[in-house]
Image 1 (cartoon, rainbow, N blue to C red):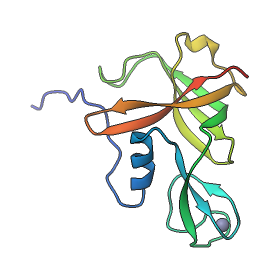
Image 2 (spheres, rainbow, N blue to C red; image 1 turned 135 degrees about the vertical axis):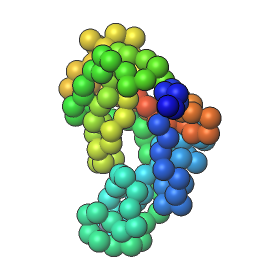
Image 3 (cartoon, rainbow, N blue to C red; image 1 turned 90 degrees about the vertical axis):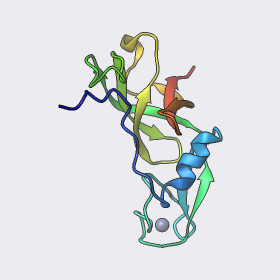
Length: 137
Ligand SMILES: [Zn+2]
């Protein structure tokens, strides 16, 4: 019988999302931007999800957003995930919606519509993960 795995779950490795992970390591939230329709998208794809164009490049974005929805996880899936923690859908200022965590002292302080700012934290041995915290307005 295998010992239980108490490591964090890591994202799959791949070229498509490499600029995203490199950006996080450098303290930047980077999204794909489409030159044809001037829209951002998340998650990374090989074509634009808005217009089907393929003129995609990576741009650093503001890291600001608002809570679209969230849940409080009160029982972590392993000791690598200390509970309680907040899993949220974040509407980024540039348009895309992404799933992330909100780091907050008191999970009762999170509400739909609350303003957020990205921050970056180590995730496992090799990754840095964009997470969010409540901002002033
Ligand atoms: Zn497009």
